[in-house]
Length: 101
Image 1 (spheres, rainbow, N blue to C red):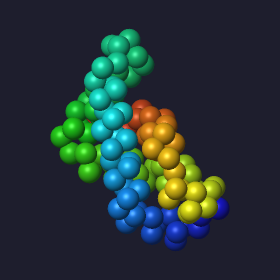
Image 2 (image 1 turned 135 degrees about the vertical axis):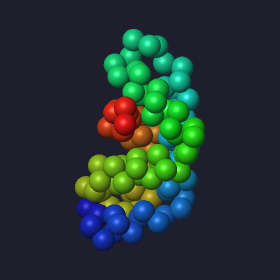
Image 3 (image 1 turned 60 degrees about the vertical axis):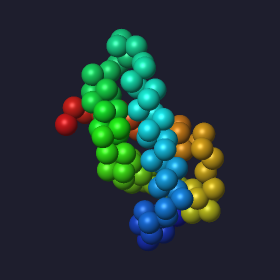
Image 4 (image 1 turned 30 degrees about the vertical axis):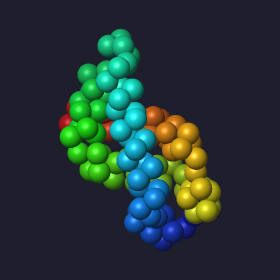
């Protein structure tokens, strides 16, 4: 289990942050192409546009949520997460940030 200090220090892990940023961009592209019947589509579309406008800002918000969601595992596991695992975490958190604000 990662300690709070370890989780806090991970926020400066550039390799991990780059993966989350890329996963946000990929998720935004998926949202741009999803059916309008998907729940919360309008807000998801606003989120996707925000990602394309400022990927780093949106990824920073997403990054902290992903770290919190994975606090039960060791830092080494978080740092060695596959692209697919990171993408799944981002995809699972889109609606948290797709709130229309």
